Image (cartoon, rainbow over the protein chains, first blue to last red):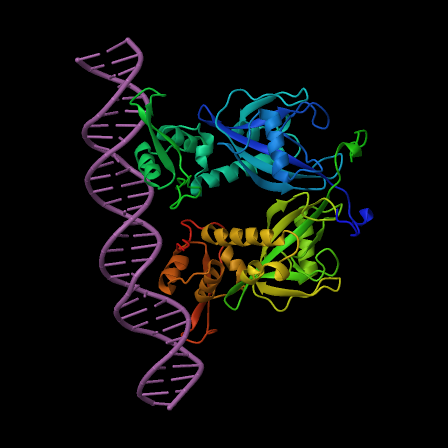
Length: 242
Length: 242
DNA sequence: GATCATAGTCGTCTGCCTGACGATAAACAG
DNA sequence: CTGTTTATCGTCAGGCAGACGACTATGATC
């Protein structure tokens, strides 16, 4: 607050609560999965929801998202984990208790050990997004979180096309085959291994060979790569028609 | 509010003001322009800013954006005018008076007569985005609006590549040349008229011929088109390298 | 009216990228 | 040793984009 400057008249605007919700995506055993937490209190008590929480008075939005992410998963945004703002949801009736505006964020993370439950006694799990979005009624996500999750998944799908973000789903070192399985899981399609290999190794800045090789899936050992500096792919990866 | 359900404890979270800000873009005389309004009160009194205002207690975010748009310009979202959510800005210090979270929206509109000033005595104008973003110091936009405008412009630029939104910058009926000048103004490049014509007329669903012809620029009369039903372009328009 | 300038529209050609798919390489399981 | 699995290299045809020539139809100028 700047001295000598009149603050807003508090009666001139309605008060809002502002939260962040997280769509945390990863690829586990060939399926795109999202992090869900079980709600411990009403409304929607006992139902699954996206992790999230209130934005504090002194933190910015991405800071709040990073804090929630670490509280819920132990993940730290930045090193290999991608965090970006997704969209903001502010329907007056989205929370039955009061007016809440939620700034949803999208997190892409490598497959990691079990999630850890948050500070309160809620449990958390990775669930295939297909399952979370399919459920009607009982199994459905709380609030408008199904919509938020769907938007996040769609964002992730399109971002794989023209950005190098698929590497955020991979460990620091990975093979071309592992990267291909990321694309296949997120897009839900099968890709030709030979064309995929030609494409990703031919795109400058996408992959950097580390020199090592490994055999993680049986078969011939594969070269190991790290993510290159490129963030946008030109030309883009092409998602096969449905 | 649902009867019998306890409301949030108001002391459990900090109160926020939520606003919408608008990045209204149009193409005027070969330049990408944005709508700017002059601030009538502190802070930043007398400086140019993006139009916007508080979200009311009973309206959703896109409703608030549509209302502000109509108040400031008389434009109604929907018929030819495109409105979409852009991003949300919530740095704790972005407004010196109090904690304000702003949900920015992007509007693409055809070139229209002079903007009309809002309800209060502020004046409004269309200004080339290059000018609004170039200015340091005195001519710069208020708050973090230069950042918001830059994000909106970047969104518009990339959306022209893979969506049919360029038609939102055109009147209901337009020629291929006018559409090309939209791309040239937004991207800041020159495009080959022959290849452009082949590309846009060959993309199914992008353009629908109306049968009429017109001469608006001198030279041979051009066919008139309306926007087709397509919303995404596949394959996309390619922005030439810089 | 002839000529020029301006815009629009249609073709051609060449290079590059993609999708389909054959072939080889290097591991493991039996 | 043989079959299976995965990785990697090559080949080939079709399609699209960029470069650019050619022709058409208007208004402007002399």
